[in-house]
Amino acid sequence: MKNLICFMCLCVGVAVAARQIVFATPQNGYKTYVNARFKYSISYPADLLIPQGEAENGDGQIFREKSGSVEMRVYGGYNVSNETLRSRYAELIRKWNNGITYKVMRRDWFVVSALVNGKIHYQKTILRGDVFKTFEIEYDAVRGSTYNDVTDRIARSFKG
Image: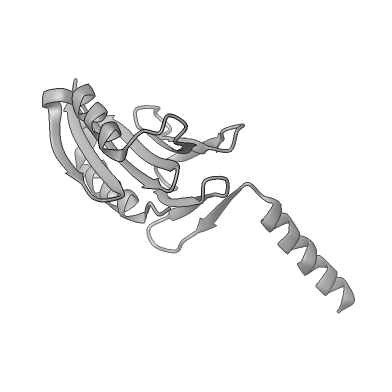
């Protein structure tokens, strides 16, 4: 019994010390990436997207499909330039210009989606306090039948 308690304490200590935590969820092979540094989480389809390892500075992670044709990025960063959410939103609108297919801005987050050069680009950015938290995914438009619904589910899971 004493050994079991020591083992359990060790397991808890290792879990708490971890900078990133991935939780398996039973539905459709989705797992959840949790970023301890910037306090956000996001679910991703583990059968489609492979985590590439958390960045050395702990700000986030890149996920790629085996073929390399789909890439998802999630990251956080301090607002050292004192930007507004609206300025980030406007910058993205300018970047994707007339390829924009969807855009919405709320008090503390925005979403922009665009079709540029045959690729779907989707970005959701949240501003909490002095931290921007961003999720981006890019995939070929011909893969829309697979990734449009996946992107919607991932975006709804993005919390921070």
